[in-house]
Image (cartoon, rainbow, N blue to C red; front, side, top):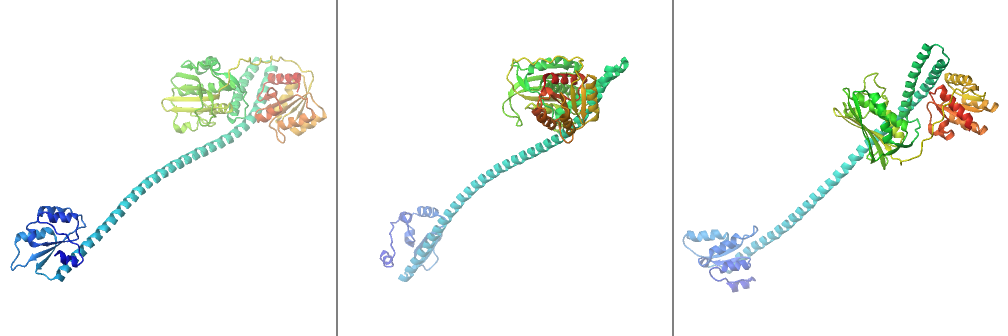
Length: 538
């Protein structure tokens, strides 16, 4: 048999009886050529174990050389053949070509199984590569999703920031527009108050009937309150120039205790928690007092049944995005009142907005506080919870402590008659112009009047006076332009600039602060300013 297979070009190995077939198959073979008689001596358990361990692609071929029988094979022989699986039975004797054909057929089948193995291996490799690609793709999808999520978060933050910026711009434009409106109203109102208050004062000076004097005094008090309202308007519109100096905040707050207690009444208590380090702030003391008074009155009105109002001071670094970096002095006014909703908090600093009943408030208190804080280089912020209370914080830039004595106040000026000095008054409002002229003439001065800047400059050239009093807001040329033109022809001429509303930066470029006469003013203030200007010169 080996010789025949060799002549056919096949390499063959003869196995020993028993377990030799299973061992030979384990070393490798393309097919097995087995006689039916040898199966009886073969260890079928080992052979079946080898067959069971075949990979899925393998179906090992067996060629069994069977003994020719006249009848049916025994059941045991059939079961063995069935257990081998891929079997070809050739009955002996058989022709050489028949054996060669059977062996070639079995080997071709085995080679096809090897091809299937290669294809399966390639498929497994491709599947593994695909799994790896899928895994990498999933990782990339996760990474890309995270990148998109981060980009989306950043975009949403930028959109929110843009919306906040747009809202802030709209609010700023609205505040600027309302500020210009209120500033214009304040100008006209101050002119009216100057005329009303001044003439009431003239009545008080000249009246002999005590009842008339008393009634005029009542009216004067009303004009004083109206003047305070215009100052609130100007503080909101940020056209009022503050005198910023180092201020001992603790001393200022402590010095207000008696005023605050009288203002809020016996049902309320004021508790002061002041920073023991004694912080100083760069501020206008009068305006800070006004701001604190406004906040305490608001706190009182928020606690209908009485209670405690707390005022605290502290020094701390900037926490608000709208403030420049650095240290600030923070004044907080805290109440345990009704509080406000978030919708109301967005509007509390708007001018004329108030939560009080009609006739109980002007709606300018918090807007004034806001304007004072802004002009001082700081800010005003509010926190409130409905049913819990409200905290309003004024942030002011820190200042170094100073031991300089305050400038002593100028001595009060008595009713001193003028020495017939010549004074030129330039004022476009007829009522104010008549009032100033009459007051100055009653004080003994010689007065010329002009209704606008060009007329005043013509009179200045014709007869140079010893003092010029000029209004700021006038048609054609404003007061600053008149002063600049007057200085070209009379550089040593003393000048007073009267104003109820002005671009104070422009005003202070041409005159000093003590040469600004703020409307509404009283006769004694006009008299004192005129006498100082004539005495001190330009």
